Length: 271
Image (tube, rainbow, N blue to C red):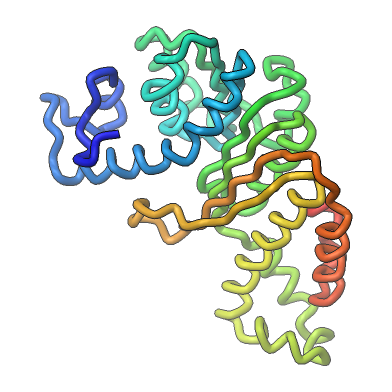
């Protein structure tokens, strides 16, 4: 990657125009240069995972809540199309208009390895167009429980890696509000007693529970900031790598936390 974050010679100018990174006359202004920097930064996290998968042959990546498939197109353009081993990128979204636009753009660019499916993340596990096993699952800014649907999908499909940027974790905060009266007997409930703290703590503990869930299934988990996406308040990046290690301790800690803060009703969600 070039430090100036200029357009690379192998990149599709037509794609960059379609994604509004380049202007229609092919210019790269200050705002679009910032966007390109953000793209390169995110690719730096995902590219080593893709490379590891491709070393063993074919790679399949499934992007949940793909939207305009910004991530999938750029991963394909920056990395996949340059590799000898074949790959497939599958974008999942429930908005049929966005799926159709992505399908049309892939055809226009001759990206034959890209597939776009109109369905909910929760329905994707059984979709006939998706293989029984996949290598990488991504879900960027997937709202509320969509990240959990992506995790369950990844567990079912035995994904080697999961890359998540969760967003709008409202369900746990709502559950905390419902049990607040009972939990006030516990001094720890001061952490989430006030409405603003309920929302913030709910978001934080949701991701903590997700990490423990992944660890309980044998994944090694790292959490970092998605530096460079300055325009987004949701800047937490979770990367899970399957190592097959015992997750008994993580499962025990997860269950203890759920019990301690009154969230046992949500145990199935983080199973």
